[in-house]
Figure 1 (cartoon, protein in one colour):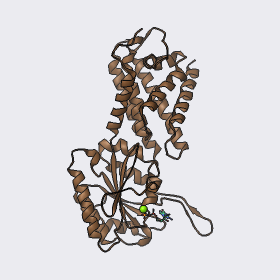
Figure 2: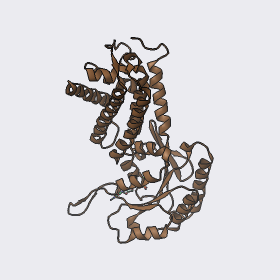
Figure 3: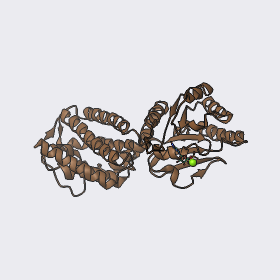
Length: 368
Ligand SMILES: Nc1nc2c(ncn2[C@@H]2O[C@H](COP(=O)(O)OP(=O)(O)O)[C@@H](O)[C@H]2O)c(=O)[nH]1
Ligand SMILES: [Mg+2]
């Protein structure tokens, strides 16, 4: 049993990784509102990585800063100063940024959605907000009005929609829990609605990036990842129309590695080559000892330096598909659990590898 000479495991990992990251893209969100309405608090409540507390961001105009973080496919453009007398200057600068970005062919550069934040307690929509919303909608940027620090609507949401008729929706949000006099605690609210509504207006090609960067809706990460598993299983089916000899199972390896890379990227793990190699390695270590495990690892096994040889035989097309699906489902289950435990923040690479290995070995025991 030999591996084709031109097959290089490192190359497969590298290609899978690049493709997963390219397919995921980079999402740009504009968050605007008067100083103190709760933009930074909202950003930290909704997105991975404590964006708004880490550093000052990069100034892109007098009142707008861009926040981004290595390994997270998100830029937040935080525009303040709408309360100022010269807000039209702020709007003019913002318009320039938006238009320049819209002109590039690279959709990863465009501003994809805007959240215009208005605090519920203010009970007012100012001209600055009206003009901002109009400017954005004129440039085809979907706007969601976010009514912040919500605790008593009193008809304000209806008022907001009336005064800002082009917004896609208006969501009442309480980004952090609020303790009232007497010890009653109001829990956070509206965040999931905000994510769902935003997901609906984010361009098709960037839904994966948005799914990855938000930490509120883990179910969404799961649903999007399952699409990747279905796609990988279909590719495996195409590959394995006839029973494939064990040695040819190598053909399925890039599909499976690509699937694991895609799921990692969709959940918002900071993936790199060593991580992906470790994750693939953990399957072999966990399940490689049993028949089911061997079949899952059949393609992968021999390619890991020092992993040794596998027994002979052939795997059927249907088996290849089933195993690809199983592998994907196990991986999703494991990282879903870790993200949930971690309140939506990324688990470490070691945590993922260890839990995946454990889950694979339990599968092996069940199959015995
Ligand atoms: N009660 C309550 N306070 C909030 C909420 N969101 C923000 N705040 C508070 O409002 C203040 C200003 O928030 P910040 O996020 O810095 O506003 P920014 O200037 O728009 O970035 C801070 O003291 C926050 O703790 C909320 O949903 N409920
Ligand atoms: Mg702020």
